[in-house]
Image (tube, rainbow, N blue to C red; front, side, top):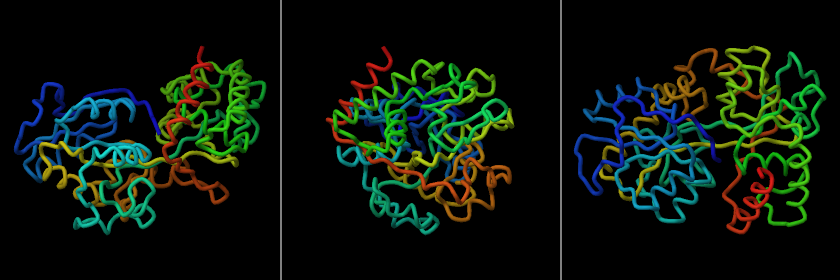
Length: 345
């Protein structure tokens, strides 16, 4: 799923566009990833351990990354696609089959993440971070049960005009489908008419469609906002009245993964980095920095205590399991895009 993050260049970053296609730069590793996602201390540790210079370029969505790869960008060694995007990249034959399942640290991956829909048996990818997409409620103002999608679609009077929705077609439509008890990847025009009607009714109460959720919640501009769990945790650090919801109707799970493009100029360094990231201490550095879970056994021992016990990554027993939504067929994508365009007019 697409998650917008502020785009930054981290330590030792370079403009990858200037990197010549097909160049063999020994001792380098070029990573193309999300902004605010790679701990500088992790980069420094890998550089010192392997005498490799790491260079980072960033994107703001899975689709941006895919478009650049399909346009012929050949200077990247490691990318960090979401689960559904991994499935697309494999289908389009854009990834190198580097066989992480044969690497020395593979046994450190938690069992639940070793055989996943987007990469059965882990032939192409290893976990980087995983989390959920739900919403946050300011309990100083909103007094009803937070764990229902009614907070978004049939809100209390206090929330009307103060709701923020992610500016993401899949997350918004999937939440709508769950509230209406309709299937995901839905190509039924009648069902999608119900979704559009729901979203158009809700629109009168929506303050914004904005993926920069933390600032809206902390400032009080939004009293209810869709959010990723890591952003929700950062917001709660500044405003303790904010509660991350686990709606009874369901919510989305996602995992970002390390993968290697077929055109990677430094393939062996990419494999080194993948194996390096399956070490518990290194995986924990990502969690401590980005505030998400990581999928590596033993990493919790190295995680900040407030993170390891945080409600945003430790759901109550009563919460449903997150739903991982595979990529939809092209006709569904087109239908969703039409609904989204009408909504945002």
